[in-house]
Image 1 (cartoon, rainbow, N blue to C red):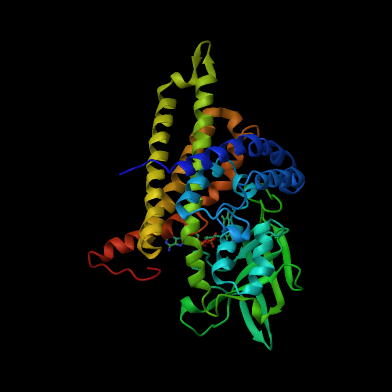
Image 2 (tube, helix red, strand yellow; image 1 turned 180 degrees about the vertical axis):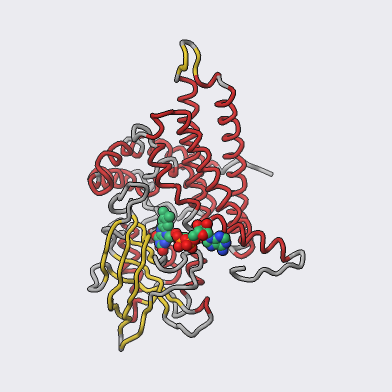
Length: 403
Ligand SMILES: Cc1cc2nc3c(=O)[nH]c(=O)nc-3n(C[C@H](O)[C@H](O)[C@H](O)COP(=O)(O)OP(=O)(O)OC[C@H]3O[C@@H](n4cnc5c(N)ncnc54)[C@H](O)[C@@H]3O)c2cc1C
């Protein structure tokens, strides 16, 4: 087994690390002070620098202005960018846009690609993905209330969504709506492209998360679709294919989230060690001389490294054997890494004492923004159920879909 990375990837990662130190980490206190919208000028100038440095849009093909990185290489890069909550945004490979780009690239018509995908890749547009509803369990995405009915040449969309990340200020949404209510559950919904200036697209509110409402890309919104009409050509990827495409979108997306979380783990780990080495609890007695702090450090080190190997194995399985073969591994890493992220960040906060819950370090924002890691893209319990169901099936116990 060879753990060495190809030389060209090593050099790309080193360049990305330098860029993060020079352009991205310094933005964190600016965004903490002014919010995402307030820091737009500084963020735009970092994005421009990223473009000039040839690091922009790493995951997309060159004909869309990207670097065309292979899947595994992008997974490694994702860890470097993940060290800051802002890294992926500055490089234009942030969720939910990156998943939407992938969908449009694979499923979009030539017109949809020109109208929606190209400006997204160029950084002129932002987008959102509108699936979860306040009145339906998001963990069961086959059960939606939002409907789209064909009326002549138009889809008429009605329904309510929430936790539509980055909807505030987005240019378009990809909406999941029921188009075939009498079909089998997995074939009822479709994806439809909705420009956010369409009459009937109503941005109701930004939802405060643990006290922080956020703005722009760093916020989550409630949206109402009130007789929202779009041309029938705005259907993305075929009628009744919504669920299948959503699952397809989430598979590789979970690898990227996990690698991003590992970046956040490493950042928290470094901050924890630095504080443990420097903070004296008595003259000449740094915190790191205490065995309990050493235990946090050693356990975190082992957990992060084990998690990385597991994520890389899952990414390798997707790359060599396809998404279907990797489905158990994808579910396992989703809950495993989200749990480690929460533990490592919590230990780093504890090591910092009161400082850990201020905005003077990035830890507090990481904790607040990423508590959701155990909920979005499938809550822990759903993934654990999926893994256990497959294991038990091999022993003759059939649990069924939502059993
Ligand atoms: C930060 C963040 C960003 C998000 N961004 C988006 C977005 O951009 N677009 C979008 O459409 N959605 C988004 N979501 C929504 C997310 O996909 C849902 O929150 C998620 O699918 C869970 O759905 P729910 O919140 O309705 O919880 P529910 O489905 O009501 O579940 C509640 C809890 O019940 C438990 N549970 C559920 N099912 C089972 C089961 N089968 N077995 C055992 N226990 C179970 C779990 O503990 C779960 O946390 C986001 C969520 C968060 C937190």
